Amino acid sequence: MNCIIDRATVDDAEKILALTKICGAETDNLSYGDEGLPISVEQERCYLESVLQSDKDIFFVVREGQNIVGTANYFTLLKRRMAHRGELGLCVRKSAWGKGIGHALMEKILAFVKNNAQVDIISLEVRNDNTRAIKLYQDFGFKKIGTFEGYFKIDGKLVDFDIMELKLR
Ligand SMILES: CC(C)(COP(=O)(O)OP(=O)(O)OC[C@H]1O[C@@H](n2cnc3c(N)ncnc32)[C@H](O)[C@@H]1OP(=O)(O)O)[C@@H](O)C(=O)NCCC(=O)NCCS
Image (cartoon, rainbow, N blue to C red; front, side, top):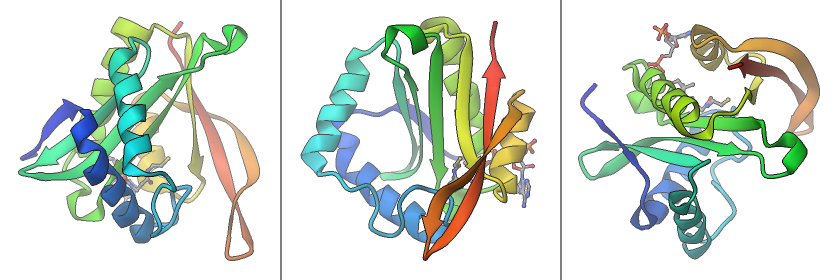
Protein backbone atom coordinates (compact mmCIF):
# COMPACT_ATOMS: atom_id res chain seq x y z
CA MET A 1 0.00 0.00 0.00
CA ASN A 2 1.70 3.17 -1.23
CA CYS A 3 -0.42 5.60 0.74
CA ILE A 4 -0.38 7.57 3.95
CA ILE A 5 -3.28 7.60 6.39
CA ASP A 6 -3.57 10.94 8.16
CA ARG A 7 -6.09 12.85 10.26
CA ALA A 8 -8.01 15.17 7.96
CA THR A 9 -7.32 18.89 8.28
CA VAL A 10 -9.67 21.72 7.29
CA ASP A 11 -7.60 22.21 4.12
CA ASP A 12 -8.69 18.75 2.93
CA ALA A 13 -12.33 19.87 2.70
CA GLU A 14 -12.40 20.51 -1.06
CA LYS A 15 -10.68 17.23 -1.94
CA ILE A 16 -12.90 15.25 0.42
CA LEU A 17 -16.04 16.67 -1.21
CA ALA A 18 -14.57 15.92 -4.66
CA LEU A 19 -13.95 12.33 -3.53
CA THR A 20 -17.59 11.96 -2.47
CA LYS A 21 -18.59 12.76 -6.08
CA ILE A 22 -16.19 10.15 -7.44
CA CYS A 23 -17.17 7.42 -4.96
CA GLY A 24 -20.85 8.32 -5.29
CA ALA A 25 -20.62 7.76 -9.05
CA GLU A 26 -18.72 4.48 -8.77
CA THR A 27 -21.17 2.42 -6.70
CA ASP A 28 -24.70 2.58 -5.30
CA ASN A 29 -23.40 1.74 -1.83
CA LEU A 30 -23.41 5.27 -0.44
CA SER A 31 -26.17 7.67 0.57
CA TYR A 32 -25.32 9.95 -2.38
CA GLY A 33 -24.61 9.45 -6.08
CA ASP A 34 -22.42 11.46 -8.44
CA GLU A 35 -23.65 14.68 -6.83
CA GLY A 36 -21.61 13.82 -3.73
CA LEU A 37 -22.36 15.18 -0.28
CA PRO A 38 -24.78 18.13 -0.50
CA ILE A 39 -22.71 20.56 1.55
CA SER A 40 -20.41 23.50 0.79
CA VAL A 41 -16.63 23.53 1.19
CA GLU A 42 -17.09 26.01 4.05
CA GLN A 43 -19.52 23.65 5.84
CA GLU A 44 -17.09 20.77 5.36
CA ARG A 45 -14.24 22.88 6.75
CA CYS A 46 -16.36 23.67 9.86
CA TYR A 47 -17.21 20.00 10.29
CA LEU A 48 -13.54 18.96 9.98
CA GLU A 49 -12.55 21.64 12.47
CA SER A 50 -15.10 20.33 14.97
CA VAL A 51 -13.80 16.78 14.53
CA LEU A 52 -10.23 17.97 15.10
CA GLN A 53 -11.34 19.60 18.37
CA SER A 54 -13.14 16.45 19.52
CA ASP A 55 -11.57 13.64 21.51
CA LYS A 56 -14.56 11.39 20.72
CA ASP A 57 -14.68 11.64 16.91
CA ILE A 58 -12.12 11.15 14.15
CA PHE A 59 -11.77 11.62 10.40
CA PHE A 60 -8.98 9.94 8.46
CA VAL A 61 -7.93 10.58 4.88
CA VAL A 62 -5.82 8.30 2.69
CA ARG A 63 -3.24 10.30 0.75
CA GLU A 64 -1.67 9.04 -2.46
CA GLY A 65 0.67 11.83 -3.52
CA GLN A 66 -1.41 15.01 -3.68
CA ASN A 67 -4.67 13.06 -4.01
CA ILE A 68 -7.09 11.76 -1.41
CA VAL A 69 -8.23 8.26 -2.39
CA GLY A 70 -10.16 7.27 0.70
CA THR A 71 -11.73 8.43 3.94
CA ALA A 72 -12.94 6.91 7.18
CA ASN A 73 -14.91 8.67 9.84
CA TYR A 74 -16.12 7.69 13.25
CA PHE A 75 -18.34 9.66 15.61
CA THR A 76 -19.63 9.02 19.10
CA LEU A 77 -23.33 9.67 19.63
CA LEU A 78 -23.94 12.83 21.60
CA LYS A 79 -27.11 12.18 23.58
CA ARG A 80 -26.43 10.94 27.09
CA ARG A 81 -28.37 7.68 26.83
CA MET A 82 -26.68 6.80 23.54
CA ALA A 83 -23.20 8.10 24.31
CA HIS A 84 -21.95 4.53 24.86
CA ARG A 85 -22.26 4.01 21.09
CA GLY A 86 -20.52 5.18 17.95
CA GLU A 87 -20.91 4.85 14.20
CA LEU A 88 -18.41 4.61 11.39
CA GLY A 89 -18.24 5.09 7.64
CA LEU A 90 -15.64 4.12 5.04
CA CYS A 91 -15.06 5.14 1.45
CA VAL A 92 -12.20 4.17 -0.88
CA ARG A 93 -12.22 5.07 -4.58
CA LYS A 94 -12.47 2.09 -6.88
CA SER A 95 -8.99 2.43 -8.42
CA ALA A 96 -7.57 1.88 -4.92
CA TRP A 97 -9.71 -1.11 -3.91
CA GLY A 98 -8.18 -4.44 -2.95
CA LYS A 99 -4.88 -3.01 -1.69
CA GLY A 100 -5.64 -3.30 1.99
CA ILE A 101 -6.65 0.36 2.44
CA GLY A 102 -10.05 -0.52 3.90
CA HIS A 103 -8.35 -2.91 6.31
CA ALA A 104 -5.80 -0.27 7.37
CA LEU A 105 -8.57 2.30 7.90
CA MET A 106 -10.53 -0.10 10.10
CA GLU A 107 -7.43 -0.73 12.22
CA LYS A 108 -6.94 3.02 12.70
CA ILE A 109 -10.58 3.64 13.59
CA LEU A 110 -10.74 0.77 16.06
CA ALA A 111 -7.47 1.82 17.73
CA PHE A 112 -8.92 5.32 18.16
CA VAL A 113 -12.15 3.95 19.61
CA LYS A 114 -10.35 1.65 22.05
CA ASN A 115 -7.84 4.30 23.19
CA ASN A 116 -9.94 7.45 23.05
CA ALA A 117 -13.68 7.19 22.49
CA GLN A 118 -13.96 4.04 24.62
CA VAL A 119 -17.56 3.27 23.69
CA ASP A 120 -19.26 -0.08 24.27
CA ILE A 121 -20.75 -0.59 20.81
CA ILE A 122 -19.94 0.51 17.26
CA SER A 123 -22.67 0.05 14.69
CA LEU A 124 -23.09 0.56 10.97
CA GLU A 125 -25.48 -0.12 8.14
CA VAL A 126 -24.28 -1.72 4.92
CA ARG A 127 -26.08 -2.69 1.70
CA ASN A 128 -26.79 -6.38 2.01
CA ASP A 129 -25.13 -7.05 -1.37
CA ASN A 130 -21.95 -5.11 -0.55
CA THR A 131 -19.94 -8.28 -0.01
CA ARG A 132 -16.56 -6.54 0.01
CA ALA A 133 -17.53 -4.21 2.87
CA ILE A 134 -19.40 -6.94 4.79
CA LYS A 135 -16.34 -9.23 4.62
CA LEU A 136 -14.14 -6.41 5.88
CA TYR A 137 -16.45 -5.66 8.82
CA GLN A 138 -16.77 -9.36 9.68
CA ASP A 139 -12.97 -9.66 9.72
CA PHE A 140 -12.96 -7.07 12.51
CA GLY A 141 -15.64 -8.88 14.52
CA PHE A 142 -18.77 -7.04 13.41
CA LYS A 143 -21.91 -9.18 13.43
CA LYS A 144 -25.19 -8.75 11.63
CA ILE A 145 -27.94 -7.95 14.14
CA GLY A 146 -30.76 -7.17 11.80
CA THR A 147 -32.08 -5.98 8.47
CA PHE A 148 -33.28 -2.47 7.69
CA GLU A 149 -35.70 -3.10 4.83
CA GLY A 150 -35.87 -0.27 2.33
CA TYR A 151 -33.01 1.70 3.88
CA PHE A 152 -32.30 3.26 0.45
CA LYS A 153 -34.62 4.01 -2.41
CA ILE A 154 -32.69 4.19 -5.69
CA ASP A 155 -34.61 4.90 -8.91
CA GLY A 156 -37.81 3.82 -7.20
CA LYS A 157 -36.35 0.53 -5.96
CA LEU A 158 -36.03 -0.19 -2.25
CA VAL A 159 -32.67 -1.53 -1.07
CA ASP A 160 -32.24 -3.51 2.15
CA PHE A 161 -29.30 -2.96 4.48
CA ASP A 162 -27.67 -5.17 7.10
CA ILE A 163 -27.34 -3.57 10.51
CA MET A 164 -24.02 -4.66 12.00
CA GLU A 165 -22.44 -4.05 15.37
CA LEU A 166 -19.20 -4.65 17.19
CA LYS A 167 -19.43 -5.08 20.95
CA LEU A 168 -16.30 -3.82 22.67
CA ARG A 169 -17.32 -4.48 26.28
C1 LIG B 1 -15.66 -1.35 1.31
C2 LIG B 1 -14.33 -0.69 0.97
C3 LIG B 1 -14.05 0.41 1.97
C4 LIG B 1 -13.22 -1.74 1.05
O1 LIG B 1 -11.99 -1.08 0.78
P1 LIG B 1 -10.71 -1.83 0.19
O2 LIG B 1 -9.57 -0.88 0.26
O3 LIG B 1 -11.02 -2.43 -1.12
O4 LIG B 1 -10.52 -2.97 1.31
P2 LIG B 1 -9.37 -4.04 1.43
O5 LIG B 1 -8.45 -3.97 0.24
O6 LIG B 1 -8.77 -3.87 2.77
O7 LIG B 1 -10.19 -5.39 1.34
C5 LIG B 1 -11.23 -5.62 2.26
C6 LIG B 1 -11.62 -7.07 2.25
O8 LIG B 1 -12.48 -7.34 1.14
C7 LIG B 1 -12.17 -8.63 0.63
N1 LIG B 1 -12.56 -8.65 -0.76
C8 LIG B 1 -11.88 -8.23 -1.81
N2 LIG B 1 -12.61 -8.41 -2.92
C9 LIG B 1 -13.77 -8.94 -2.55
C10 LIG B 1 -14.95 -9.36 -3.24
N3 LIG B 1 -15.07 -9.22 -4.55
N4 LIG B 1 -15.96 -9.90 -2.52
C11 LIG B 1 -15.85 -10.03 -1.19
N5 LIG B 1 -14.77 -9.64 -0.49
C12 LIG B 1 -13.74 -9.11 -1.17
C13 LIG B 1 -10.70 -8.77 0.83
O9 LIG B 1 -10.39 -10.12 0.94
C14 LIG B 1 -10.46 -8.02 2.12
O10 LIG B 1 -10.51 -8.87 3.21
P3 LIG B 1 -9.10 -9.31 3.90
O11 LIG B 1 -8.57 -8.05 4.52
O12 LIG B 1 -9.53 -10.33 4.89
O13 LIG B 1 -8.25 -9.84 2.79
C15 LIG B 1 -14.35 -0.13 -0.48
O14 LIG B 1 -14.65 -1.18 -1.35
C16 LIG B 1 -15.31 1.02 -0.70
O15 LIG B 1 -15.06 2.14 -0.28
N6 LIG B 1 -16.42 0.77 -1.40
C17 LIG B 1 -17.37 1.83 -1.80
C18 LIG B 1 -18.00 2.52 -0.61
C19 LIG B 1 -18.55 1.52 0.37
O16 LIG B 1 -19.14 0.53 -0.01
N7 LIG B 1 -18.34 1.83 1.65
C20 LIG B 1 -18.88 1.04 2.71
C21 LIG B 1 -20.24 1.53 3.00
S1 LIG B 1 -20.96 0.65 4.38
